[in-house]
Image 1 (tube, rainbow, N blue to C red):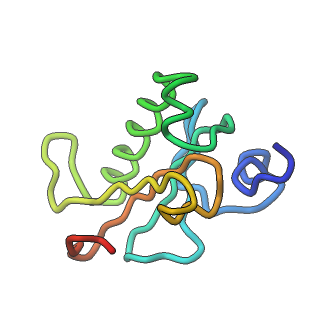
Image 2 (image 1 turned 90 degrees about the vertical axis):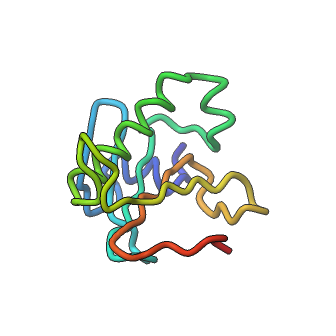
Length: 119
């Protein structure tokens, strides 16, 4: 989609601080971080929400979650064996949830204690 910000990042039309990439996913630092570690993980193919992606390609949704965990390990928020010190995954779905870019993305947040409820 030519007007989608994240599709343009995947196409390398817009620069991003890429921290992890697979053949199906891309992870880059958020330009407005809400925690010391704040990375966005996206599928390279355009899917607006998690619900739409799981209906179209459930394996790709699993790849996005696996990439998010790989980022957490790479950033020191977890290890392969343990979830220490920990991280939060957030996926906003739709305008009422605060989704502003309508291309599925997981926020990987960590490096500080996370309060509950989130907001």
